[in-house]
Image 1 (cartoon, rainbow, N blue to C red):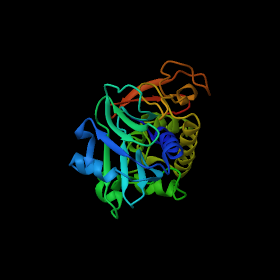
Image 2 (spheres, rainbow, N blue to C red):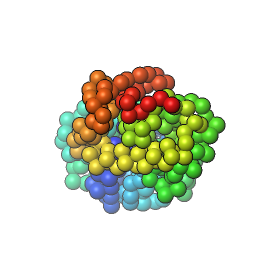
Image 3 (cartoon, one colour):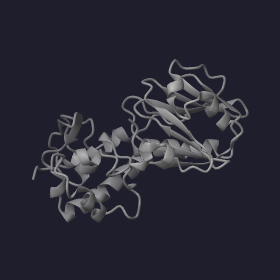
Image 4 (cartoon, helix red, strand yellow):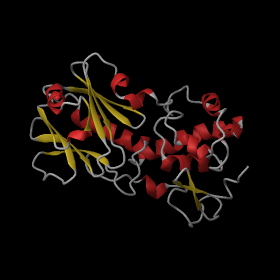
Length: 279
């Protein structure tokens, strides 16, 4: 599933390519992709003639602010892709929604596993009122108030492994498996360390590590190891700079020890036993 750097990469590209463009019409090829409204005709009618003013990101959600004070929400889930392309490009088997603009251009939503969703939030309504997942999101990692005190408060009652806590979107918005592993490595914290046992120093290191790996991920256009591409179809390059993710059995870039992999909460977890000793 695309994480914060991948979604932010898409947001920036969408902002550059589609802002101030008017939507001529739209076509729904798979109705269940529309989470709201439940009537596809209402969705198409609500988009028609609207101009995209700005693209925002909240966690892993994309939010387009439209000209009549309405919003278009998108969640890519596991395999969703937004492609900005010429209308003449052949339709892919997994194309679910097409949004048409002038000059034969369109924004196309492809999604192989069909978990991705779109919401059209009516005029004057806060997106959180319709997109329930946004209501539950924790703080953004780049928020000035995201600090060790915030994490300490969020984690003080939790004895689950810190890796599991980092994947909890109600704790921190936007982090997934890739950047959780990378953040824990750079902060020297073993992924199985209980969340409520982290010291102030460890939490401060973790905050800085999270911001660093997410910034690096954005700089590299995100991570592609299976499906992710940006709106032009280009893959992200962060995987080539990864410290531990998907590097099982390879030497650590810091100590030359061997990168290990375990399962936590059903997710593969990569770490260096030497740099991240269990406490």
